[in-house]
Length: 114
Length: 113
Image (cartoon, rainbow over all chains, first blue to last red; front, side, top):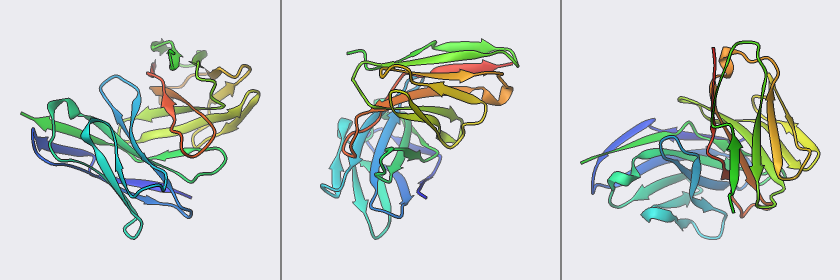
C-alpha cells in the first residue's frame, strides 16, 4: 500500500521568502509523484510531476521539486514567494498500477504575508 | 475544450433525499474518478472507472453508486443522503499511461441537513 505524509498542515511565509512544502511517501514500487495546487473554491491544478525521467522536476509558476529516493521525499520549493502563491498544496503518489489511482496527502495551506 | 465539467456546482439536500452528480469530459479520456474532499483529510477516492461500462470501488465507496454508460460521462449517485456526506466532490479524468496526470473538475459543494 502506498501513502503520503505532508508535514505541516499550514505554512506561513513572507512575500519574497523561500517556500518549502514537505512531502514524504511510502510505496512498495517505484512511485510516480505529483504536486497539485488548489486555489480557493477551485479544482486541483497540476504543478509538476515526477515520472522517473529526472530527479529535479520543474513546474509551473516557478515551483520545483526534487525526488530523493533515499529519503523517500518529494519536497516542493520556490525561491521567492508571491502573494498569488497563497493556496492549498497537495502531494500525491501513484504506484503505476493499471488503474492509475492516486493517494493524496492531507494538504498544506500556504499563507503569504505582505 | 471545456475539459472536465461538473453539474451542479452547489446543492443542499435533506437527510434521506437522493441526487445524482454529473461529470463530463471532452478529452476522450478512458479513466475517470470521483473524490470527496473534507477539511484536513485531503482527497479520498470514492469510485473510479477504467472505461465505458466499468466501475470499481475506491477507498470510501459506502453510500454511493456510480455509472459510466458513456465514455465521456461519469455519474455519482447518493441514494439516501446522510449528513456525513456533506463534502466537496471532485471528478477527475486521465489518459492511460503513467506519464499523464489526472485532470480535475471545479467541484460540487454538497450540504446534507
